[in-house]
Picture 1: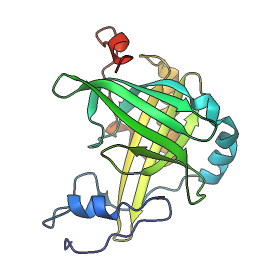
Picture 2: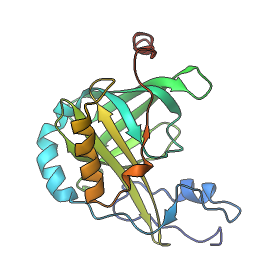
Picture 3: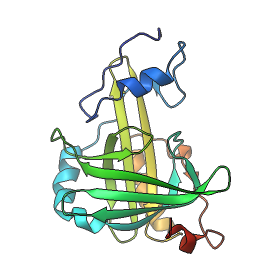
Length: 208
């Protein structure tokens, strides 16, 4: 693929990612996280109808249980995501340990899609805005979230997470998420477990 080829975002992407992907694809090199194919079909309208009245229930601390490869996730261990809801949208504080062993904080926002598409949008500093679809959650134990962006060149990129309300997650909830991802043909072998537990400085992270 020639580097000057125009990549136009699909309707699933609320804010165009063209500049970010084209920059990453400079010198005729497509980044590893952009692959051939297209985003899977997701029942976004049904999910949004169920979840929109319950957005406030998503507030609070979510621990990252596992994720697919994501070059924009700069926190590698002990990841906590704290969602603060203001009746319209969330501000998010993510904390944990980076690859260099130091504590790191990242700030973001999660808000209803500004164009009215039936999903949330997630927007972190030093990253780009993308869809944030909650495939399944009970709000009190687990959440399975998915972001996918199509490009008219026949490529797409996707990122998936399993969240937990505590540093560990009962296997029955992990299986619920795995089933939700398999239902949209996401290969669950892609998931990598995030290190959590007694060695994580959760109390220190709260002060970041």
